Image (cartoon, rainbow, N blue to C red):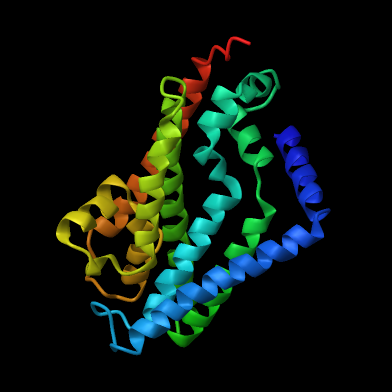
Length: 257
């Protein structure tokens, strides 16, 4: 673990040395967030609410989505190119020679400092939303607990797909539809059909990173056992993803070069 910590510090220092790149990424992340907010503003110029959610409540959902996606890109975007970089190019062979947990090493080695800007932007939007909606400390803490569990669930899904890279090196093509579905979490899932809601809740649980935490905290639904089981379900997905990923690594035999 100490080795991974030193690696993380090294990656941060390395990326900080490219100040121009950092400034560029800051601008890009801020512009992305502004575009998302402008979309909501445009929508609410036409209507007062979206399926029972007003503008500030939708901003809360958007802020949770932005923070969750920021964490994913900051630490786990490597799952998107894992099959190409680590399997096809043989980089995993080098990782396995090191006396460290390969999952932690790959995660810290691919740490993206630029994505921290996205997390900060999401946090600022969250602070505004929480203040406007007058959310209490307990509610805010519960939101972050739900958010953490939901984010782990999304990471777990990508780890599960990545675990098949050993057998199917071209599996990275499967990530495109998953990334498209991740965008669905920016808005209340109640606007989608029952089938889409089922997919976004139980198959690819992106609704857990923003919609359900916000809906529960805003008392949009009466208390249900679902609000306890869904975070547990998300955590279980992450555990399964992690175990499958580690198991798949043990089957790796190199590229043959």
